[in-house]
Length: 244
Image 1 (cartoon, one colour):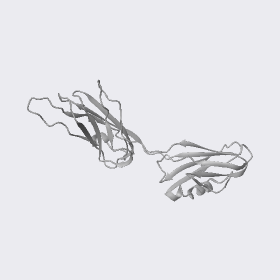
Image 2 (tube, rainbow, N blue to C red; image 1 turned 90 degrees about the vertical axis):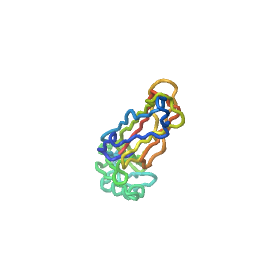
Image 3 (tube, helix red, strand yellow; image 1 turned 45 degrees about the vertical axis):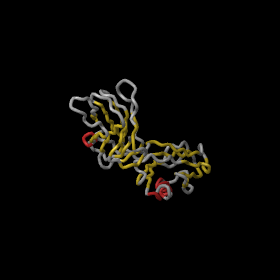
Image 4 (tube, rainbow, N blue to C red; image 1 turned 120 degrees about the horizontal axis):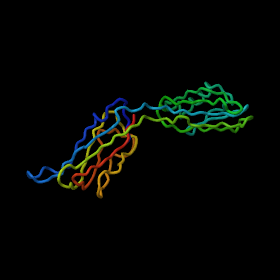
């Protein structure tokens, strides 16, 4: 499971486990399934988000180049363009400034050998996001190697951590039917991936957990973890990732 969450949340303390569909108590003395959350673990702090950084190395002594981001292309930029003009051209794209994003540009200018690359940092609505890499068209450059090369120096993204739940049937009887464990997550957590099952612990043939809901971008108050035919005295683990 991936989820976004504000940093400094004590996830372990905030997670509550409840078990549904457990067998009702039988007559006194008869063994029954009894389920227990053996442990629920999670990060107490998540690292901050990281803004993506890319660099454009222009190896030329004349001519110009263009930069393209998500299908939109800048005007022709001189090989030795001032970084403020490179920023203005990129921020003018509908796929950057048009969606609330922004870039700042330092470094440059281009030269023979490309020894002073332009350094581009993404922000605004594109902050803490693994954005697409810019592409460069160097067909109009002259001199030097007449190339413009883009590389990603720092991939963007949110802080990430893990939430793992261990479940055990501590009763004296095998459970039948579907057992559902619900984890109440702290406010502000949103999934960014499909919850997943880790390898089960214990021995014997066991049916893996299935996790729901699936997919990214869901606001979760609880996560359903379903299992069938759980034998007494065994424990299972499901885990995932949480993100800021």
